[in-house]
Structure formats: structure tokens, C-alpha cells
Image: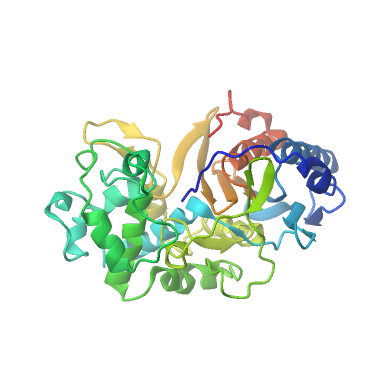
Length: 383
């Protein structure tokens, strides 16, 4: 999930926000003092350069937290510092939890990856006859992304982010779209596919997908701060999201309650919970090794070629080091979870600035390289 706009630089942020970064840092855990200090200096510099109000960082080695630290401000208006417990929005990093819930149902025998989605979603259009559950998980269904330019080029958004929709209404809107390509022939990122997966989970289990995540993932792992977004509920340690508009920092744009609960990435979490998640992925606590292997394998297209994406995870490598990762952006927040799985080393970065200006993927990769120079990409790509 990404909400994008073109913003100008907030001129005063360097004075009003960046100055407190170093003195407001909140730390949990420890690492080598030299490397830790270099990381702090790097993060501080990137936050100043990108005008990021607040950032939380966790470094996890072999399933244990090496460093967890907050930098800058979680809330500018209230002058509240970020700490490891601070809660941010996940954006599309939440897709990996949706995919995990689907794979749990696969292991339960309630879903089969290569079944047509119409088996689980009555009323699916004929154009979906060849779309499988696997296609939805891997962004190869051909169903257009509801945020794509092709759906907004006429000047009106296909999905009005300020309108509430029921699951049935969303399903009807998506099912009326012409496919962009035959299922399995291409890869094209589609938030729509993951919204549909959330509806599918509800149909199969009788549970709202967010309740299924709580019951089967968050509570068993002790992820007590991770949950579906709610602007109405009182949530301790919740950060505010920000964007830059015409030279001024602004609060995040308002999104309707229903569209803050869809399965393409509408979650709250913090770096401490994400470290628990990372640790669990080295075990069979949630899924069998074979299921995880499928999630972390590059999708094979109809012509035999592959795309570097599994089930809710980007699948790549850096200098021979396997890298399983995902980023996210939503409502003035950005997120990155980068897992160097063969090294059993993970970097988690959460920020409270929009995706046009903050680049947590770049920060996560550089932090990893400060620990191990062989993990530095040849050239960092900027989204």
C-alpha cells in the first residue's frame, strides 16, 4: 500500500526536528561500540538528508536483538521521542503476514495453491477462471493494482481512499476490471490481489483476516503491539505519520476506516515485534520448512522465466548472500525488513515520513553493510 504525492522540502525541519536526533535516541540492547556508533552517525545523517522526523531501527543476529534504537520524533506536535516500543504502520510489509495466513490454510488442507480462486470466492467473473491462489500471492494474476496509473489516468481514483467499502463492494469493483495480462504470463505488483486474499481468508475461515492473524500469528509469537490499524482506538506508543507539502511538514492524509483494514498491508507494529517475527521464521513454529521454502522461491512464469518475488517477499541476493525482504509505505510511514537468511542477519527500519522522501530500504542495506561490507549492493536503487 502506497500513497504518493509530489512534495517540496520542509525548510525548517533541519532546525526544528533534526537537531534532537542524537540527544533523543532511545536504546535497547547493545552491539560493538565502534560499529554501533558508526550506525548511529549514518542513521542520523540520512535522517537529516531525507528530512525524516522519526525512525526506529532493529538489528537481529541469529534470532536475537543486537541493537534496537529509536531516533528523532514519533510525534512532532507533542515532542515525543521515538523508542524501540514506538508503533509505526507497516504498509506492504504486512503482505507477508497475509501470505503466511494463506499458507497455514494450505497446510490445514483448506486451500490449494493451484486451485482457481473462484473455488473459494463465489461470484468470481469468468475472466478469473485461470487465476489461482498462487497467482494472487505472487502478483501474477493480471488483476490491476488499484493504485496504478492505468486506473487513475482519467483523473478519478478507482478506489476513493476517503470512502468506506464493504468486502463485497471491493470484490465487485475488482472483479469488474479487465485483466492486464493472462494469469501467470507476467509479474506486476498488485495491491488488489492481496486485498482479494484477505477476502478469501474470510470466506474460507469465517474470520476477518485481521482476527485470523491475531489468533494464529501475533498472539502465539507474543507480538503484543502488532494489530490492524485503527485511528479510533487508544494505542500506546503510536507514532504520527508525516508528509512534506509545499515546503511544510504535514500530518498524514486521512484514509477511510475500511481501507485501513485491508490485507495488502494495513497493520501497526514496532521493531521489537518484528524481531520476534524474524526469529520465528528460522523455526517451524508457524509453518513447515517446505512452506517457507515456497514463500521464498522466485515465481516461475508460464514461459519458464522467473521474477524475483515469492509469496509476500522479494527474493534476491547481494554478492552471493541470499536476501529475502520487503518494503512498505502508507499514510506517511515507510518500512523495510531485510533478512540475509544464510547469514541469519536482519535489519528492520521503520520511519514516519512519506515514501517520496524517505528510503528505509537504502538505510537497511547500508546498516547491514556496516556490519558486513560484503552485504553492500553494487549500486543502491532509489524507489
